[in-house]
Image (cartoon, rainbow, N blue to C red; front, side, top):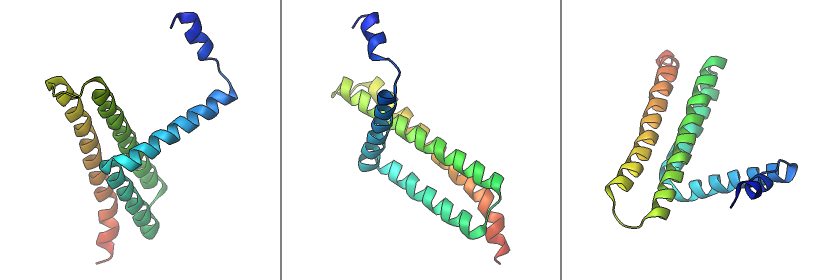
Amino acid sequence: MDLEKRKESKKLGFKRFLNSIKYSLDGLKYAYRNEQSLIIHGVGTIIIIILGLIFQIRFIEWAILIIASVVVMAIELLNTAIEATVDLVTDKFHPLAKIAKDCGSAAGGVSGIMLAIIAIFIFIPYIWKLF
């Protein structure tokens, strides 16, 4: 496709905006139906919200937990995209494909562990007060 045709297909407009929302929702649906780690992070986020409501955490604590949760979800979605792209390019084992998939998975794991540590730091004082 030449540059002029690409510019034409990228015209801004309300229909394009609505399509971008639809495509985003399609991506979320696919990821939640096919990626176990995204479901685990989703359940963890629900637990964090429930604990936040129970303990009536402060605004700044909510902000930190929401930002960290969104970062984890975004990284998991990017990992899903990396895995799909690698699978599209090759169905054979290749060391570079393994590195791409493993590093994407590691990014999700590291961010999930960091979210867990943040949640522990925030909730431990509230739980400690119960005893």
